[in-house]
Length: 254
Image (cartoon, rainbow, N blue to C red; front, side):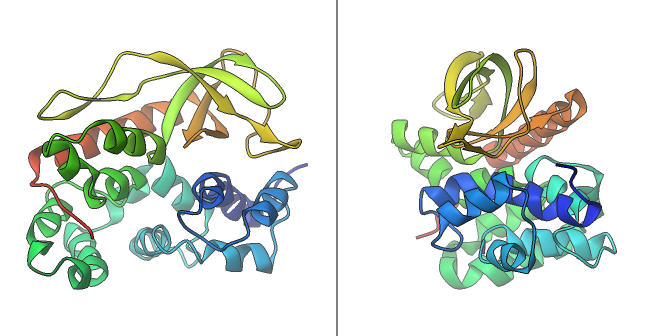
């Protein structure tokens, strides 16, 4: 099936949104329908309405779109900027980024707001990796000595990249670069092999894969096939977020 330009953005967003939705973390409470629509590339008004229920991601899309003069937050370039990273991220003024963070999180954080506000104005970009590593409380938990669970969540929730070693109808083996906590900072570690999901009951998110392909991963699902350029950008923006998080005080949302 050929995806139309108007459908490309919503479909791309859905590919990355489904894995956390299936785990019950965000979005509407109907992951089976979201998977069916995404696998069928069925982009319509109902799918667009469902995608707006992802309250963590949606304000970032609006921020990127507004700064780039794009009317639709689900434009494919905007969606790619948030999940993978592209030049549109740099259109967002640091002050607008900080104001957006303040509007969303200061009511939750109260007196603990300052570190997050500083991070959002100190090199952070509205990329999914910042929401995971810079906003969620897990880096703060690592700094208290609690490592295994926070590191697992950080690695699963961020968008990872991997090189396909084996590709099957339901599962694939990919070589990925996990996060490592050295006791003080987060880093990308040495590559390892992981077995991940490509489809459930014949329904998948990604375009077909063959060994040697690059792909993106969210939790234990393959989301899409990536070009080498996209891999470089995703890695680069992830490294940038790690640098911001490693230099900033921990933030805690509770």
